[in-house]
Image (cartoon, rainbow, N blue to C red; front, side, top):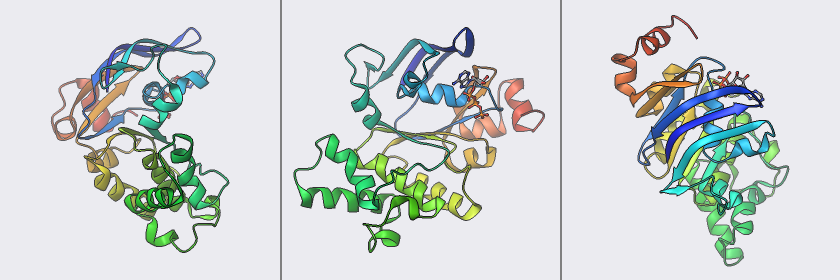
Length: 248
Ligand SMILES: Nc1ncnc2c1ncn2[C@@H]1O[C@H](COP(=O)(O)OP(=O)(O)OP(=O)(O)O)[C@@H](O)[C@H]1O
């Protein structure tokens, strides 16, 4: 994905100021920065999730494979399948585990019949590292799973519609350390197959899971580069101050 001069307003308030970034498809990219700096706002512009907030307005251009995602011809439902999203709090549908995964492929016409759908469900759950834990109870409700399992179910749901990009907005903030470690392992396994962009409050997590990091401060993207450089040899003073814990 590529953004050029993106600014986001909530009413008169500018939350993101002139952000241009090329996000490579072959890496995990982390967005870090102090609370309120605009990480989530910027992430949500990448699949037009801000469209659901009436006061939000986006300026600039955002391209997915060279296509302007804010053009009038863009089908937003289709876009959100191509650019999937996983939220802070796991949000499975109040439906069976099977239906949670099958719903997207059904509405997007990705399955020819029941056998096809069964295969997609199995493949998505396997890819999300959840198959062995749920294969004998696919008809149980998705909401009956543990928090960590629910989050992997949500990742499986995103995977089921064959996305190009997966956006993750603090996907581990509601999880315990063991469930967090499983999600981080999963991100590692998915790396390369999908472009993954993760907003995280944890610099340790960004360092563990990402190869590229963008540091945001007061609505601006201050610095963007290899994760190892950002954490060991940042160019900007503000990045240095943040990673050494001087503020945030
Ligand atoms: N729906 C909204 N309406 C009005 N202002 C908003 C809305 N959502 C976010 N903001 C404001 O935009 C700014 C950026 O918020 P955002 O949630 O994107 O930051 P963040 O870096 O993700 O913060 P955090 O790490 O605390 O989640 C903040 O000043 C916030 O108050």
